[in-house]
Image (tube, rainbow, N blue to C red; front, side, top):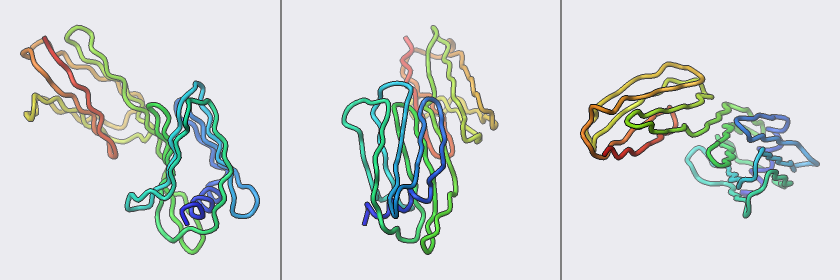
Length: 193
């Protein structure tokens, strides 16, 4: 059943080619109820592929054993139950997701989402972050000392987000910086001496 569900979804999603960062995903129909999934990356990496239903149950899951730059596989599936599903491909710090619905054998793509984890760095007591906001959504940035919120900033829908904080006025200790998106939370731990 899981195998069947994936084939139909991939067939309907055929022809959708999208790239984010270095990863490129291509889904092509084959003969009846079969589809080819092709994933490529500019560097050698492991790919994690899964399909989940609307409740988060894994319908299909695959992880490449060794780092590769390309993955191609033919899937054979015969039926998907009506519902909402998400096809995800993760490679290193990059995640590509396609949300789609199935109703009486018809598939409709609802949303495509690309996420690349932010880059965090410290330069002395200056904290810096860069984030590519592919979904173009509002973000929130928080600074915590344990459970105590020290700083909060809302960030509008910019594509290239560059933020920094001067932490020189803080006492030595452990702090946490959190970037919150609509669907993810990215955390960075800081130890000030």
